[in-house]
Image (cartoon, rainbow, N blue to C red):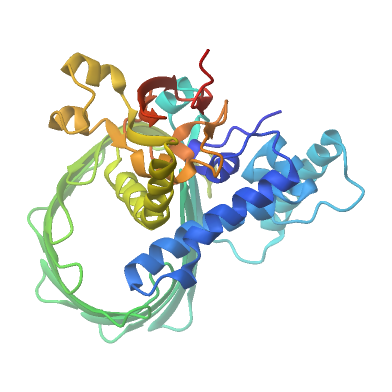
Length: 466
């Protein structure tokens, strides 16, 4: 059985090896990538951060694929099987035995939750992508889970501890937080919050009831990573019996202002927000209708400088402590993935140019142009150019640099069959849900050539000519 990971999480794609690669081929691929992405090679902080993130992906892929037992589990069950959190034992060697153990561990997890002394609130979300599934990938695009435990310490003090984990494509984040709240009076309170994770913060926030219909909140947050400070101020006012409006101002490294409103009655609730910031701008809105005391439907949308999304779904309460929700999301979020790919290419640039110059001197293989994405749109535009117009540029990615890097010392380039190219280092998916191809224009021994291959097809150049 083959792993059904998304391209960005495909460990074979990260190392650019076939699923039948030998141990020596795995080691060789790891050494090649490690020489370029090792963080110690870079002094510039931004380049060092990019190198660190990509080196971690390479090292994780190598550690799994170089371990026979881990590789077997990954090939059968993907990263989900490896991330079960338990050792499978030395006696397990057959797929049936591994499957039985994983099911036993899942049951034990459920029992542990039931026997736990506390009853935390939590949520588990699965992000399913129909276009990705129809394109040959996994239907699960990402997953997220969160949990929180609240405890009242005294009449005026309460403690809340929580955490969350989320994975989308190749990106994963997690955090844990603790909040201590002190009620100063019936009209004022103060909160002390510590957050650990990708964004480690210490913050203090105070709230005060200005009038019967108005509330003001002020806070300060200090980043433990770089020492940056953000100041926040928010004002909330009740506009009617069923609606409120708010203004939220942030000053600091992520300065911005947002204006929002909310309305709610027995059957419906709706909200909207417009945000202007130094890093992004956008607007969002959602509407919820309660069909009964136990079920509801939800429609929401978001548009901005980084994404365009539309979501429809609903939920139903199945017990006193549990609710099931199902949403269908249609969205485009490629800008961040493109930025990540460009940063990864920047790391490859020096070695790629050196390899290219060596091939030029010997009359060998030189990639003069390589474009990945929706080539049919390019053909309709009349030219194989990424910058032909904005519409075309948004659906293709220039991958000339990473392909020159992948040319080996023998002057050959091979991309393996069955491996989606969006998972290669320096690549991304520029047009989710749309069939993709790779166009390569190259020179070899003074002659110009052009080849086009599908997303999962093998590429082997130069080809022997008769």
